[in-house]
Length: 308
Ligand SMILES: NC(=O)C1=CN([C@@H]2O[C@H](COP(=O)(O)OP(=O)(O)OC[C@H]3O[C@@H](n4cnc5c(N)ncnc54)[C@H](O)[C@@H]3O)[C@@H](O)[C@H]2O)C=CC1
Ligand SMILES: O=C([O-])CC(=O)C(=O)O
Image (cartoon, rainbow, N blue to C red; front, top):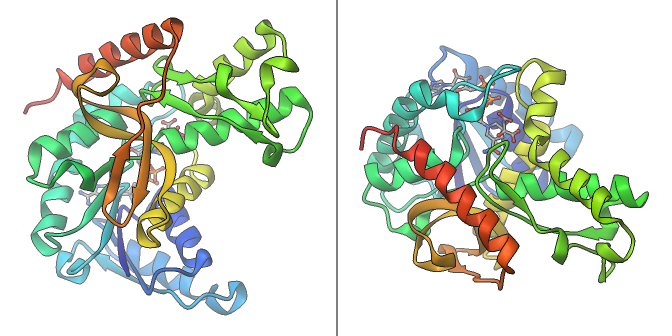
């Protein structure tokens, strides 16, 4: 199993580290445009192999896509991150060109690859990859909901004063400060609805904290987060590589599902060896449907800025 990660920055390197530590891939190639950077990150990570007990071979490459040939899965984390005070949407001007070029280069050397898009604004970058490449729709997956759901569970565990592993929950919708739709009605603590423990006001607070999860960290760090993003991407990579048939909210191209068309946005999907093997159309109530509709309008507005 060969995994390529383009963009050896904070998120790309974190993802490479988690993939290696989980020890399911034979090879990880890190590629970056910055001279020597991916080679350096790869060497540093390889020097953790005996410490962390993995056998994955990690190599680096400065923009030489021949090194990525035959990749089964490729992750796109190349592009600029936001700074405090910015929205993800403001990154489109620089990141659209980078993502389009990177996706095209990857497919040239790995025509059967499954792509995971991470660069922001992620839903729009995922849509761009659909428009710019001829890959089938099951092979283009946007990562946002897996991370947002992890943050949702963290915030719920804080409110419930319990370990995060007690909590289950999911965030769908656009990966933006205003577009996320945390499904509080369906969240549980060990099968008991969280609505049994938390007031409506406290749950609203959890939702709002979840939606600005990325912005909160960006303010604290001066740039956007990388540990949870890297871990979330590695979960998607593992589900595909190991044909796990796991359900994650991912940005997928919709053709009528959830009443939406010609858009990539976060919905529950089953991930296995064929990438997105199924879109799971869960039943939403009227309030959730309205939030999803509003979220999709935001994503479509950003898509309108693309030159496709
Ligand atoms: N979807 C999500 O949930 C998340 C998305 N992100 C996004 O991921 C992207 C990367 O974030 P970080 O890793 O923090 O940024 P970073 O600046 O640490 O790393 C980005 C890397 O991309 C490289 N790069 C730029 N243009 C390239 C090209 N044409 N080819 C190859 N490499 C190129 C840069 O040299 C740099 O090393 C950002 O757009 C950020 O907003 C970050 C966290 C979560
Ligand atoms: O907040 C950002 O810009 C990066 C990101 O998408 C996240 O951490 O959720």
